Each structure stands twice: as C-alpha cells, then as structure tokens.
Image (cartoon, rainbow over all chains, first blue to last red; front, side):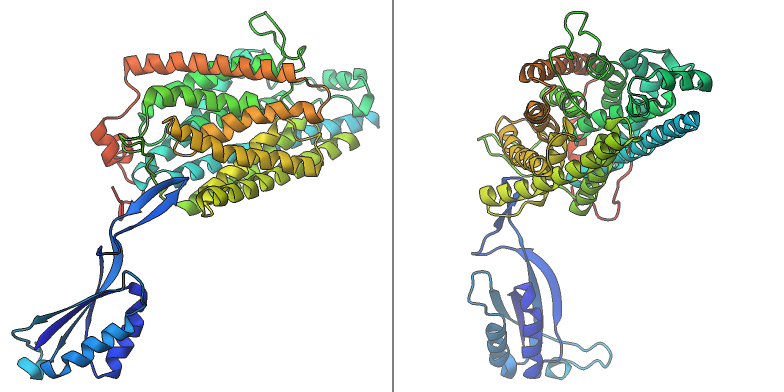
Length: 112
Length: 421
C-alpha cells in the first residue's frame, strides 16, 4: 500500500477530486497548508511600499491507495493539477505499512 | 410682519448651524473608522479609545477656555444662554442691507459649530502617531492643543485679532473659508511635531533604506470612514457660509455643497490614477486619501470656484497627496494613515489656490497666514510634546509595541478571536 501526498494549488482542488472520483478513489484527506518551493513567495504593494509574502497558501491532499491503483492515481493528479505554471506543486509517494478501518476492524487492502 | 420674518430668519440660520455642526461631529466617527482600518488589528482598541477621548476632551476644553480665547466672551461659556429677543430684533432692524445682511443667530449654536472644528483638528493628530504613542501622553497633548494652541491661531484668523498685536492677517488679504489652513494644516503641523519626536514604528524602515509596508487591518472600515468624512464635510464647508436665509446665501450654500462633493470625486480619481501609474496597481488606500485630499484642497474656498474648477482643485490635491506620502516615507517620517500629507501638504495647496478664484484674497496674505499658523502650531506643539516626553515619555516600550498597544494601554483586544501579531 502507498500513501500519496499531493501539494496542489487551492483552486485545483475540485478538479483533482473529480478526477480521482472518476478512477474509483473513494476517500481522501484535505488540509490547507502554507509553504514555498521554487515559486518562492510573491511581493505585494501597499501604499507604494513592497512587501513579500514568503509562504503561499496551498492545499495538501492525502490518499491511501493499493499498489495496483498507484500509477493511475498519480497520473490523474498530475493531469488534473497541472496548469503549466510555476507553483503547481508536487506529489510524494511513500510506503504505507498498515491501514485499519476502525468500524469493522478490517486491515490492509480490505480497509482501503 | 417684518419682525416675524426676522424671527424666522434667526431660527432658520440657527437651525442650519446646528445641523451642520452635527454633520461635522459625525466626522469624528469617520476619523475613527478610517484610522482603525489603516492600523494593525493589535492597535485597534487603542486608536478607537484615542478618538472618542480626544473628541470629548476637545469639547470640554473648548467650553472651559478655548472658545473665550478664540472669540472672546466668558470662560465656561457663562452667559451664552442669555438671549434678549428684543435686543436681537433691534440688531436685525439696524443691520446693513436689511434682510440680506450678515447672519444673526444663536450664540450657543455658534459654539456648537465651532467646537466640532477643534475636535476635527485634533483627530488629525491621532492617525499620524498611531500604533506607538502612549495613550495618556496623547490625551495630555489634546488638552493643550484644543484649549490653547488651536484657539490662539483661530483668534488671529477667523476672529481677526492681530497676531500678538503685531500684524493683522485680514489686512494682508488672508482668506481661509472653512479651514484648509486653520483646521487641517494646523492639525497636521501638530502631528508632524509629534511624529518627529516619536520616531517611526518598529520595522517600518530597514537598516539599508528599505521602506517596509505595514498593512492596514480592515479596508472596509477605512472606506466607510472616508465616506463618513466625505458626508460630514458638507457640514464643515456648507456651514461655514454662516447663513442660509436669503437667496444669495442659499445659492452660495448649494454651490459649496456641489463644489465640496465634486472636489472629493476629483481627488479620488486623480489619486487612483496616479497610484496605478506609479505602482502598477489600483491602491485603495491611496484613492481614499485622494478623496480626503480633494476635500481639504477645496475647504479654503469652496464658494467661488466653478464646478469644473473645484474638480480640478480636488484632482491636483489627489495627485499631490500620493507624492507627498511617498516623499515623507523617503524622509522616514512615518505616518500610518497619511494624515500629514492629506491635511498638511494639501492644506497648504488649498490656501494657495484661493486667490485664483477669490479676488478678496492675496498670495502674500495666504503665504503669511499659512506660515503664521504653521510656525505657531508646529513650534508650540514641539515644545509641548518635548515636555511630555521629558516628564512621562511619549512612546510605549518595544515589547508593548510588538504585543500591540491594545493590550498595553487598554488591556483588551478589538478582535480577540483572531489577532495576528
């Protein structure tokens, strides 16, 4: 099992959610986060003086998937979240050792 | 029959004064909202406290001694309610030009109209020294400003007294209709003296000459405040016609309302366009300052310019204010709301354009008058601020400034659920 963590532009969240639903992903966790990468911050103006916003708002989407689903999920997110502009975000994939569905006690792939 | 008309004219002009005074009083709400919108959230309660307290102090000090210093009469306004109707009717009968002659109205209404102008002058100071000045040092200054500094220069201008018995501004051709210089530039001069002794907010200017932005917490409030000031200004300028009750004066009042409004509009559009050209963005706070600059610019003479002329005067004020704000920042004179630029720089401009449309005034008179007001208010304010600084200090500690003066001075926050330090 794998944990897919995608950092995306906030306005892309709906498109990403729809794309994942279409390929049969039934659950995800979404968090509002701030950070910077290559895009760095950006500068704004107030009364003629510039100021820099270092940490930009982003959305973090976490999805637990089976090995079989992994490639289609990563591809769906990459496609949906892509605006071809700097700051589109990143997708991290990590190993997931165990999953438990609390209500039934199911574990592993059964719990996904 | 004629006597009845005099009764009515007296009542109408008194009523006009009172309504205009109430409009000007409402400008205190405008300043409160404008300033609380342009400071950071952690300094909101304190700036509101300053605004309500300074208004009240101004009202009390002007009643105690300010009005009698400025216009003569008894201290504590004793005797202001003693009006002998027969004597007033006698004044009407002897008045030159009869029914269309000078305005005769209640003395108490005159006080009420004048007292709200003092509060306006003092309101200008609070914005410039915001976010770092001690509350009680500021209020102590308000006592001196509204009870002595402003009434003195007011007596030389609107009351026509000679300046320390030396020269008369009226004889030199000085004219300031509703107070571009007497109220606005005077307030800015007192503010400038305070800011010079106070220093900039921590973090405003970097060690290598950077000018950092410290963004206002609530632009809807700043916008509401500007609209309230804009509305109150109709009383400020309109009431300064001093009379409503005949055809010529009623027309003059209407023209003053029209010109005041159009000058504000001209100032706003000009400042908005200037900011867009200079910074590449439409800066709302500059546009708001532009509307106020237009109003200040037209205040020295709102009755004689044409409507187009008034719009242009306001527009020049709107351009001036943007450049003045940038220039003051370069000089490291930190004015969070732009009060010194709006009321000072543009106040001077307002005085200087009067002779273009009013042939009774002269450039020499305007320059000497402007200088007299500035030197007096700035000089005495500097001494008073310095004395207060010596005795009790005028600036909060660095830690209190970081935590916000709301907690340090008032012990409460304006938005307790989400305050960003």
